[in-house]
Length: 195
Image 1 (cartoon, rainbow, N blue to C red):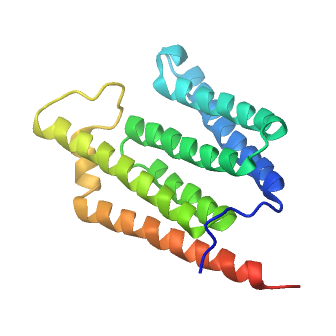
Image 2: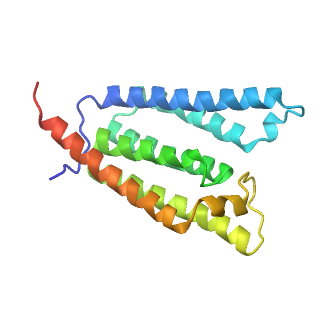
């Protein structure tokens, strides 16, 4: 049976590692965006919504590191970090389109929730990811069906819906739940092993 509480032992180290990884990913995204805009003939970095999204992710990362020193309940900080990660990933997926590789970043967050937290945490994150990805896909579908313009979205609805069918969406969402369950079971087994 899984524990409903996150393990307190070693959580600060895990949070620091998670923040470092998150900072590296957001920094790499921002750096690649700056390099791409710099090589463009008409650089418009400040009008690019990805710039603001990656910058926000970096600001949140610094806030997480600051909160590690100030916050007493690190379990809540851990859960808050993961929920905000799902929201930031959803922003990236909305901007680029759900058929792009950014959708697979949901797997990293669900795995972190189950492996570093509990299986229940992973399942909640999988559900949140499923709802947000479904809403984004539904938005792209609605924009194509009713010829609506999605604000700031760079994905073209015809291409997105051609590549990201409902069957693929369902398979993707089931995979999120399977990952949460498997990572939770793996974390349970690893916690029982004494070396």
